[in-house]
Amino acid sequence: WSPQLIFPQLSPGNLVTLTPRSPPRANIYDRNGLGLAVEGKMVTVGVVPGRIEDETALLTTLSQVLGLAPEAIKAKYATSPEDWFVPIADISVEQSRAHYATLSAIPGVDFREKTVRAYNGIAPHAVGYLGAIPAEELLAWQALGYAGDELVGRSGLERWGEPYLAGGRGGTLSVVTSAGQLVAVLKDQPATASRSIYSTLD
Image (cartoon, rainbow, N blue to C red; front, side):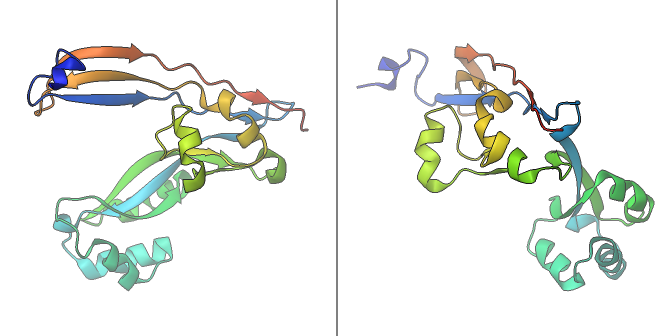
């Protein structure tokens, strides 16, 4: 027996790796083109422990801006490595702009922007929402190509339209060395573009 019976490139020390590729989730609109569920942005405010110079000032300011107790903030990064970015709380882009000058002036505070699903609050019972895949449904979702850690439609149009909104998953199946160097590409499957849903809601 030898792993090379599976793939000739699987010589000792080589590994098979899958790099998934997913298109951005498409939007849900009403009949007039108003976005009911669209791609939005949030800003994660975090702390890099090794850069803190005045911890009291940092905790006081973050507490005022984020509405968290200083003890709760400190507990998040207390045991983290000094060079790690430790997320503290998410705020809107508008809030980050309003407080950027104040927070960016404090050594140890840093920001990360991330993509989120944004809803405008209209007809939430019909539009639905995204949620984690429940354990009892994991195998069924994995059979559709999901890794299992994605957010998927759990109700309403988000659930019904999952095949359209999520698009088709692709990825690259490769053989690499233990150091991560590429040996061969076994399969490269492009992702299928997602498609927005235009509802009859007004």
